[in-house]
Image 1 (cartoon, rainbow, N blue to C red):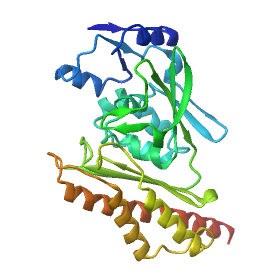
Image 2: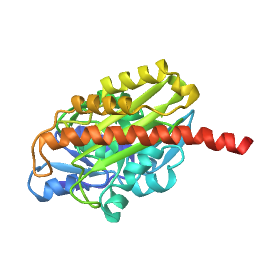
Image 3: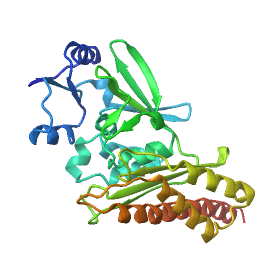
Length: 297
């Protein structure tokens, strides 16, 4: 296997187009494990970490554009303000060494259903920027995942960046695992509030063959918040609404049995995580008004 180290994006794109089956490497925390175990043996791998433009993030027009090789450590430390949900998810990824190497671009490339950042990207309606020698295109993240480890990315394309709307309300990421740290999620759930749109975004991880949103749960809670006029009043969210939200989130999942948990446990855990995550963000939303009222008193 050839291991290529291009310094420019055009060199990387040429390498991807020149040989079928070439694998891009952003952080390598997933790809190198598969190579070491003999699960994958591509003709060539293209390391992207020497390409300067991929290691930057920038804010513009209410969105944050994160280059493919920006590591989780930087996302957690530098983007907690505009992207609190993504920063929270980044802090839960593996060990410090993994967070120093792993990237959102790499996670999107391998598209593991248990990846920590995928639920937040779904909840935030992010876009994935794909590039090849043929040109550039952007794909809504909700259309990006197609199956187990599969996406709409063509064989000659690279994930160049992900574009995430800046938060306008509280966001939360909840994760269940067999221990408290250094663990792959048994299941996970993200919630993001978008008050200007009267919308609640969601994302489920490790409870289906791919990351996916809980669409029925989103529609249900948006309807309840509108009908009860809670966006304006910021009143408490009834327990019945939280419970139904959790039930609908669990119904959206299609988990399997494996060494990390049974399908029944995963479905139950998704309901619990969804209920808790929605409760946390709604409490934060209400507390923000309380803090502002206290400041004006």
